[in-house]
Amino acid sequence: MKLLMMCKRGGIMADSRDFNPITAAGYHDLETKIAVLEADRPEKIAILAEARAHGDLSENAEYSAAKRDLRHLESQLRFFNKQLQYAKVVNPKADTTVELGKWVTVRFLDDNDTATYQLVGTAEADLDAGKITRVSPLGKALMGHRPNDHVTIVAPNASYDVEIIAVALTSPHN
Image 1 (tube, helix red, strand yellow):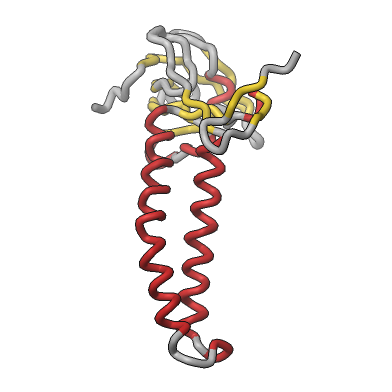
Image 2 (spheres, rainbow, N blue to C red):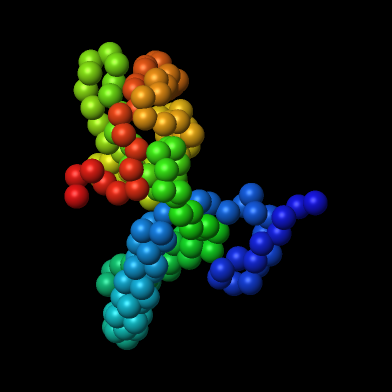
């Protein structure tokens, strides 16, 4: 029997496998992005209306730009709302098993370099911020492991080994 869940937004019934795991912080970030876009929307509509009032729309560059800007904003709103609609907040357990939302410090065995990453949902991935998705080669390989485990990561162009040094609920850099 399929487990059906009610989506948080829109009341749409969906199979639980259709949901995208996300951290609470990632969910909040999506809500913030949506709020900012919704706050900008009336201004974009006003700019479009003003440009429309300037006459012939076929040769009105200001109108074309305003229309393009509003379409871009609407597209972003649809995208973020769809991500939020299918998001399922995952709260990590207070143990040392690598799972979504946790910070993992690893040592690369080939050069003894260390790095710390947070495993996040696909909508939250940001390598510059140290946030890797759980479906990336590294994220997938680390899931379910604990400190002192040696893990082989199979990437598209190579394989490499890491040792898990630490697993935490919060960033060790705070």
